[in-house]
Image (tube, rainbow, N blue to C red; front, side, top):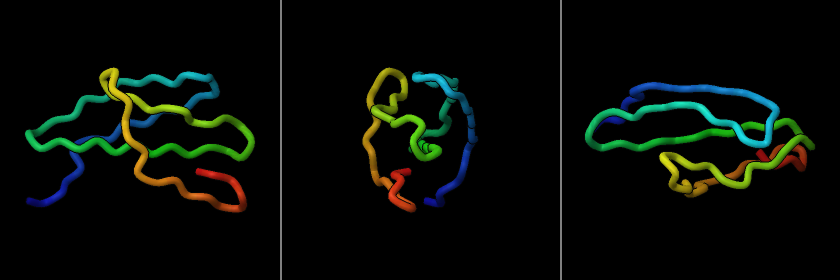
Length: 67
């Protein structure tokens, strides 16, 4: 089975909670969420989809700042 991008959604803000709508399609669905922050701004505690907490797969760090 080939991997294909069905749709992409983006959002930005400066609030403690950021919410946006996204709908997945197809029968074998995977949702990948990427988060990028400026150093010293905020941290990400949780990411949820449809009320369910998602699992962190990886975190990258550049210049002592975690991304």
